[in-house]
Length: 577
Ligand code: SAH
Ligand code: SF4
Ligand code: F3S
Image (cartoon, rainbow, N blue to C red; front, side, top):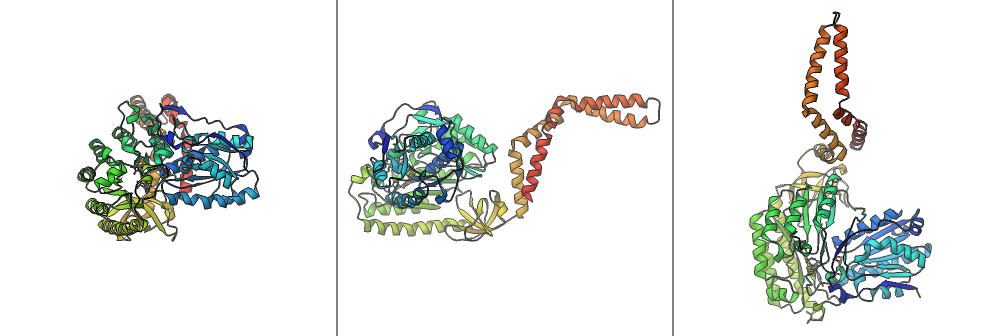
């Protein structure tokens, strides 16, 4: 039997509590015992679920890296392994059991091995004890509200030699100053709020992530500005319901204001997930249409096209209200690509309700859809409603899937012959000569090109549609595109920016300009005085002027950066080679 120490166990009922929320700074001091343990050791993280979980992975990776661990992608080498779980549907949850079993070998090989279970599944009542009893080599069960405590909790496991459970079901904190090791150098996820207040009757998320809490606008904008300075090209703002962002702060902040402020940072591509249709205001549509760097791609989950089904789901809009918002968005941005989530087989769904969903999908003309068969989640109201027989759900799912394929194909066909800006993710897994990336409308585009274009914006002409991806060809010379990328990075580089700012100041300074003119004159006089009596005098006055210019504080300031700038440019030259 494993020894278990319970510091905090989850209570799904408590998740609905709304305590006063306080902004706090993360404790970044690693306990000595963990620092000692981490020397020469590796961590591994496997994440399931949504971008919220991906962001938690980045934060946990940040803490473990600060403790002194090195990351490994080879699970068998891990001294600390984290399985970051998702509870949104039953099949997502099932995946973790096989994954846990794989780590038995790590424990056998290395008695110090620690397996950590994190993520949304850990918020379910009693799950931690059950898991540790079956798999005694689980060292830590940590909740989504507790990721910032990972280092303290690992230190506690080492000290106590017991398995620890620490899962809070609600949080009274917004933690800032979090360390993070981002998974991508070009695109970044930025949390704007945590949790969800909507309590749709099918959904587990409010129970695993707690009530909605917004980060302060200044904290979010500062994080985005830093990403821009670091040369990131795309930011995705994250929240379970981005449109209600800021309302809990009660200081007049809202999503429209935040979206403008982030667009103003100059990030080349800005997008956000997930929108709640009835809270997508006219003002938000206007902001989206106004800024060129906000993508014309919107994930706009409808869940069902039937007002009666939406009511049972506790979605706070009708079919008509949804269509009104979608049409307004299309009117303001005719090139918008709308995507959606649809659940089939929701409790009590009739054939008529399902047909309403099909007709709505057709009417909106989605560019692509995520479709799910309803999965009962423990503790949610819909789990106790009258269930639709699985064979009915499957049959409807197949009918929906076939419509979705047609809609996706129709949208993809409209792209043929047009040129799109693609942010290159890298060579495709199947063929190293083929690059893959996303256009601004969220569609995947493949084309032949050199690997050095990874992370660059590239113009691609779409030639053919493969429905879920498109095939195209580059419009410009790859070297020209790469050179543009180098210019982009240089224009965002803090050192180069400062160097050119100082240079600009020198060029515009009237005193230096005047001295420059006098120096040119004096040089001429010096040349004319060659072999004449006043040559010595002219030489002295020329040198005095030259000395004065060279020692001007503005020039000295710029020249002090010279060496560092030169080193950086040489480094860029080497990369380009
Ligand atoms: N906050 C987001 C997404 C949350 S989960 C939103 O409101 O859209 C992502 C998607 O999973 C949901 O949009 C929904 O379509 C699906 N989903 C959530 N719970 C589900 C369940 N119990 N069964 C099937 N699909 C579900
Ligand atoms: Fe779940 Fe609804 Fe909240 Fe989305 S809005 S996370 S579906 S409760
Ligand atoms: Fe899954 Fe939790 Fe996200 S349940 S979808 S990982 S919020």
